[in-house]
Length: 318
Ligand SMILES: [Zn+2]
Ligand SMILES: [Zn+2]
Image 1 (spheres, helix red, strand yellow):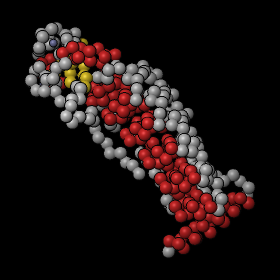
Image 2 (tube, rainbow, N blue to C red):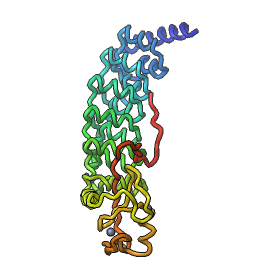
Image 3 (cartoon, rainbow, N blue to C red):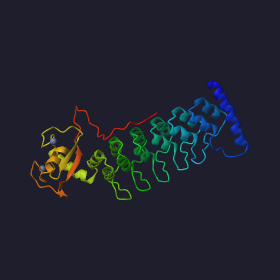
Image 4 (spheres, rainbow, N blue to C red):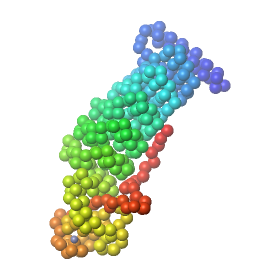
């Protein structure tokens, strides 16, 4: 039954291709190859390519090539066949999206890896100047962000409105792990967009508080640097209020004098006084509130690190 269906498909599509050929028009539109890929039919894809159909035929309006469709749908085997048959790795759609953009958007890590192995442009930009890294960061695909960075994606590439991938990841708030990855690959936490906003401001505005605190605690952040050196002056291992030990890689609150506390402990104290509960130093105030900064405690030996994850999102993959 399957064989008969495929045979009928080949006969019909052959006559369709011949009609196009006889009209001497470029091979655009819903070609048999696009149909076969939509169906995920490897047998039909192979047969159509063997008879010599154009591997880079484009769909009307969107200009998607067969490789765009395979990348969008995470069809790893078909993507390999198309590439072997000289598919254009960096083909552009009507909006300048490449197959790597579509794999990055839809979380297909295996297809992204194949495209990059075959020299896909890791920093290909569209009219809005977004790169695949912007797209993967926007959609919360941690695995793809990691792959793109390992293939030397420009971590500080700017969109048309001067957004870096760190801006996008911070305001999307999918996964603090992406923010962590970008920072490890030297993303600039102080980069400003056209509205003068840094990534931490965008995270705060969207209510992603864990990401906001995490960004402000980064040592490259000007304030973070100052508070980190204050923290290092005392190197406390426990909260001076509740006397409980800090957990490794925990976000802790550091105040102007350099003393550190649990967030909830210092917030309770700050309601009563703006003096440090330990040294009684009057702290600088902002709207009568303690200026609190957050840093991450150091990882210690023989302890399991706690990942700074605000909200773990499942990443769909091939
Ligand atoms: Zn405490
Ligand atoms: Zn103090």
